[in-house]
Image 1 (spheres, helix red, strand yellow):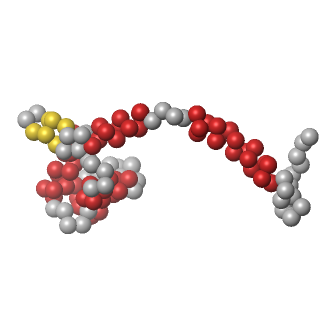
Image 2 (cartoon, one colour):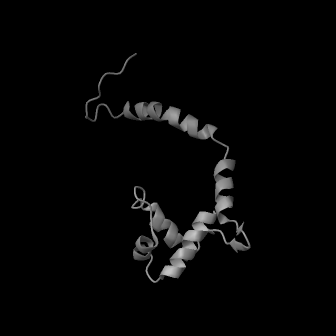
Image 3 (tube, rainbow, N blue to C red):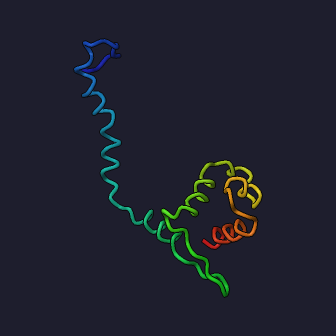
Length: 112
């Protein structure tokens, strides 16, 4: 049995669910086979841990912290993908932060 191109009529609706399930089955099987989440969990744990650097330690980026979330959202926007980001460009995105605060945030990012 071979399917032909389906016309968009009410007469083809009964066959449509079968075709959609057949088209999505490989993706669903692939996703259901992925039961290993240690890689992502390890990365999340690493970024949220405190990091010692020389004689100083820098706190990590705990998720759901409002201030850190603003920084991560600003970086995730993609505006900095080509040329990178500087203190001045981050200050434009993070309202209420002064240059020294942005410098400390950037140091925390580098330490991670």
